[in-house]
Image 1: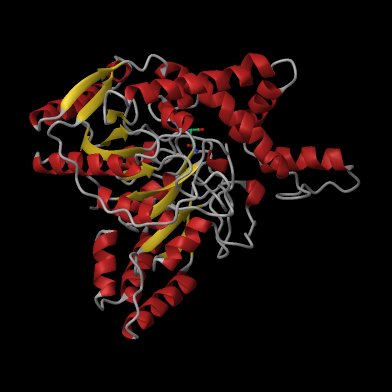
Image 2 (image 1 turned 180 degrees about the vertical axis):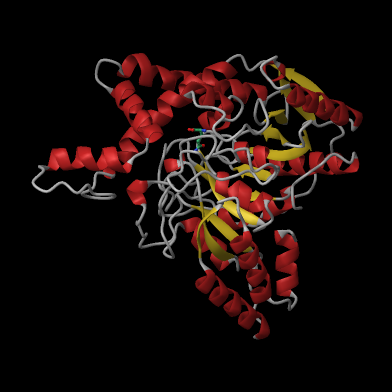
Length: 480
Ligand code: GLN
């Protein structure tokens, strides 16, 4: 499959967007991974034809001209449904497009459909999706990761060169690692969340899945920039993101002591050793960093995220929004309780209960307030680390993709997020790039983190490591 950059160049120089989109639709209809929830055949072809007309008329069609894009099912689109992988919103149709969707379309991208995710983006495997689990294209007996599993699988299977996901605790980076593609979570406040169905508003951020860093930067340049509809979005104007691979010579690369523990799968430790070796040969200065609070990340995250989710999901009560139970004669309280029990799956109900508990009068200080204090300490620890290094590297996940149904204990599932939640807690940018594979040919992911709003530096560093990887003949993205 061609990269987004190649497609845009091809279309902008007279190649047919309709043909590009037709081919994508054909691949999507032949796919068996269950990545797609809904395909927008008609509107996609119409938009592609408009792009072709614009180019024939001598107008510019934008930096993503004719690039087929898939959108995670928790990002609002006027076309089709926005179900958040839930029975609760099975038939929900949004009256508006999310800011990110409008920006993609204004840049010439063609939205080809919605892709499956864990219910309300809660999960690490896409198995909590009401519309069935997604299969990992690298091995269909395995999960694609989550919660943006459909987005990752769609890119890894070569259906589309770009998909959008959302990342609250790792939901872009972890599935990118499991499927063998690139997944980028920008700094909190870089990309508008208007039209993203909120899970945990202080942690959520939208970002792209691609097959390479240059494409991630291209899409990021289109997405970023202030939005009057999102007060948490930094108000600077939108501007393209041009990456220049950073010079590895002299780059200070932080390696957290905590990232090289026995908790990692052997293949993951081997990858880390390889990365360090390659980087120091290329002249990078490896700095040991002590992230002593890394292991407090999971508990801090699961208190804050569930607290915010319990509030955000209160609107889905069968009256204002969402599935309504058939309960003739029931009063409003009973109707809400019934609708919520029927509409939400087990994991979402668990999180709402956890979140309600940590916010309740007697436990607020012991859990929620305490988690907020630890959040500040974790952020401070990252800021301190970035005084000694330009980027931090770690595995994206402690293991490669596990079998569908292989993890049933919720806490074990939560531990998949060990390396990813920190970026959301601290609001810093993070990217996962494919870096080789394990003995079963399953993709391995390398995570890079940078200081708040150092998104471009992060992408520049990722581009250099990607080049190093390619020179060494180490496997990169699937379908690149
Ligand atoms: N796996 C994490 C969770 O279940 C992260 C989810 C996400 O980033 N949306 O909460």
